[in-house]
Amino acid sequence: MKPWYEKLFENYAQRYEQESFTLGTKAEVDFIEQEAGFDKSLEILDIGCGTGRHSLELARRGYRVKGIDLSENMLDKARENARKEKLKVEFKKADARYFDFHGQFDMAIMLCEGAFPLMETDEMNYMILGNAFRALSYPGKLIFTTLNGLFPLFHSVKDFINANLGTSETLVNNFDLMTFRDHSEYKFVDDDGKTHVLQCNERYYVPPEISWLLKSAGFDKVDIFGCQTGNFSRKMPLSTGDYEMLVVAEKIQKK
Image (cartoon, rainbow, N blue to C red):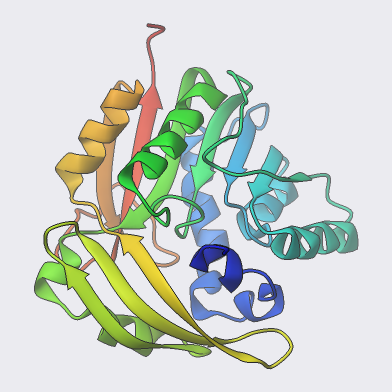
C-alpha cells in the first residue's frame, strides 16, 4: 500500500497550483537568491520540487536547477510548465531517501515540506538530510522549511490548516506529545473531481532537534528562523505562532 503522501500527489498537480500557499513563490525565491549571493553560476538542487514552482522561478532568473520528486504526476506538470516557457530545467523522478548526488550542487532547497518531514519514521527523515548533505559541494548550503513543533503546543493544527487551505479539510487531528507526530484525516478533491480521505502522519520538530540532526549529518552551521508564506527573512525570529520554521544549514569545512 502506498503511503499517504504518494496517494495525495498521484492526481493533484492542477489543484496544487491553486493552493494559497503557492502564491509566495517569487518572494521566497528572492530569499534564495540572497542566500546564493546572486551568483548565477551556482547549481541548485530542488528536493521535493512538486510542479517546479521554485525551480522554474530560479530558472527564469538565470540559475541552473535540477528538480527531483517522488510523484510522476507533479513532475509531468513541472515539465509542461517548463516547455511552455522554454525554460531549461531537468526534472527527474527520485526518492529523497535514496538519491545519490555526491558533491554535484552548490545549494539545495526543500520547501513547503517537499519531502522532510513527511516520512513515516525519524530515521527516514534523517536519511533525507544526509542525502542533501552529500549532494552539496564545499562550501554548500541547504535551505528548507519544516513543521514547527512549538506551534501545536500552543495552537490547534486542525483549525490552522482548515483556515488556510481552500480545497481540502482536516477532519480529525491528534497530536502525539510523545512522538511529536500529528495523526490526521485529510479530505481533498483531486484533479478529476474525486473526493479522497487520507490517514496522514507528519512529524513536527523543535529547533534543538533540527540543529542536532543537521550537525549529526555533517553540517557546520545551522540558522533557524520564523517562516511565513512569501516572507522568508533572516530578520524573523522563530515563535510559537509560526506553523513552519525556515532553516539554513551550511557545509563549510571539508571533514
